Length: 322
Image (cartoon, rainbow, N blue to C red; front, side):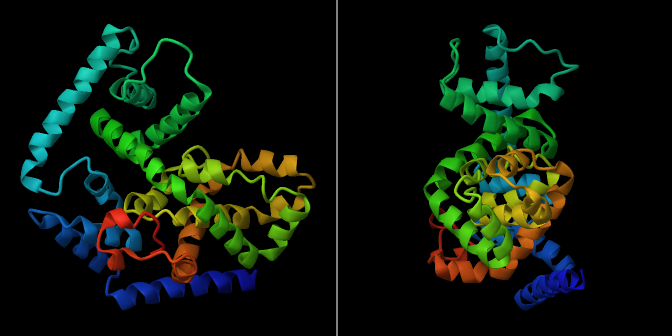
C-alpha cells in the first residue's frame, strides 16, 4: 500500500512540477484562459493547446467546446446572430419531426428524452431518416450518438447546444478512425510496462486480442463510462488529442487489476469489462490523466506524434499526447 501511495505521490509531484515549469498553476490557469477568451477574435490554436495541457474549469467547458468544435466561430461579435440561426434550425427540425409523427413528447417530458431527439434530429438533418428497419451498422452508430447525447445533455443547458455539440463531437470519430490501430498498439505497449502481471494474465487466457479496444476508442468511451467525469477526457479529444484514449484503457485494467486477476476465462473478463462499475469512473479518469501527463512525451517520441505547438495548425494535430 505504501508503495502505491508513494507512486501516486510521485505522479502528483510530476504534475505540479510540469504545471509550474509552464507558468500556469491554479488561479494563473484560469486567468490565462480568461485572457484567451476576451479577444474579439479568439485564437483557436492557443485555446486548443491550453485545453490539451490543462483541461478546463467546468464553468468554461461549454463555451470552449463550442468554439473548438466549430459550433461557434472565433469572432465574438457574431456569436449572438449565429446562436439565433442555430435555434431556428433546431426548431425547424423539431417541427418536421412532429409533422412526420416521429416526435410525440410534451413539454413536461421533453427534457428527459433529449438524447433520443438528438439522434432523430441528426438522422433527419443528414438525410438518414427512414421508416424501414435501420441497418445494423447505422443502429450501432446511433447507439454511440445516443450515449454521447446523454452526457452532453447534462453539460449543456438547452437542446440546441446539446444537439450541435453532440453531432460535432460524434463526427470527430471519423477524423480519428485512422488512428485506432496506433491507439491499440500504444495501449498494449503501456499496459505491458505498467502492469506486466495483468498483461501476462490476459495473454495466457487468449483475451489480450479480444479486448473491446475498438468499441472503447471509436466511441470515446461514451458507451462504457457514463459518468460526468469523462468530460475531463473529452476536453483533450475536443482539442485534438486522442492518445488520451489509450491511457483510459490502461487505467481501466489498472483500477480493476485485482478483479481481472481472479478471472479464469476470457468470457468472464470480457463480461466484466462490458459492465464497468460506474462508481469507479472518476478513479479511472484520474488515473488516465496522471498516466498521460507522466508518459505523454515518451509516447510522443515513440509514435512520431507532434505536439500542437510544433504543427502550427489544429488540423494536423489529430493525434497528440500533450
